[in-house]
Image 1: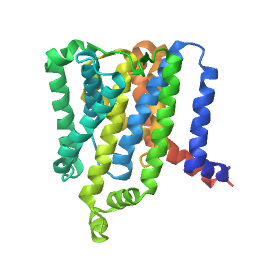
Image 2: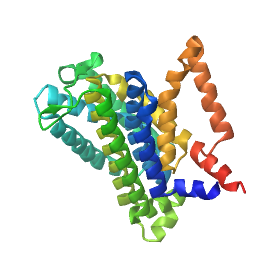
Image 3: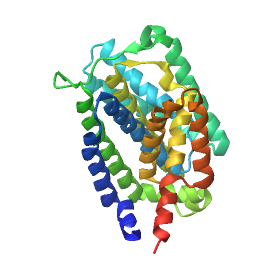
Image 4: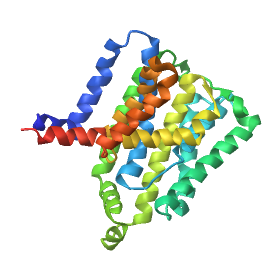
Length: 316
């Protein structure tokens, strides 16, 4: 069992399992509702994999990633709906815009540490949310705005099944990208920074450059997921840009297990699907949800995936 778990934790074994789950899952989804939940899980997982690189591996907290998610969504929506750009070009442009913004703001923000960094990223997210909410001529304000369907070579991509395979493929590609970054010199630098910035700098690591690069990567992944969410839903509102969504994303990463790429995917899956399952409790849904989160973090403080992997690895 321990050897099997070790295989699953590896890059190739884990990717194979993830690809198998994506391929087989439609057999257990009887209607469009289940496809919709699976698509939302995949989109949240893409954001969380990028956020885990920043928080779990680099040790840099961000409470404003919903802002990047919302910027990607609204930039793509505005370019397609208001200016008639091709949706695929708008998606790429939105990701590039967010990347440039993260590059410009990341250097001064990432000089901060601890709760100062958390407050700075929180402030950035709030500013983005306020701008999106108040610029009614561009964004529709609190009421939101419609978004044109995603199109490739003039053909609109519609239907839950089509979107499921698109998001599933992008999730696998994102996990593969994350593992390559982790195994690269940048990934080793990030782990050194997480352990001790002073020691990493003494060993010759360019701390500012490494933190800035991973901040940009995580922001761009959030923007891509935001654009896809907007095109899939056909409508976007400021609700996905607010502070609470940032907290949800961080909670997904922590619940699944920080510094665990598959933990980020599992955390996104659980916290996206759990509210749907808890609807049977009606008025007590939020109470049960909170109890589940508290119990998980009390008995599994390292997160679900690292804790379970450690328990299984100890078995003879």
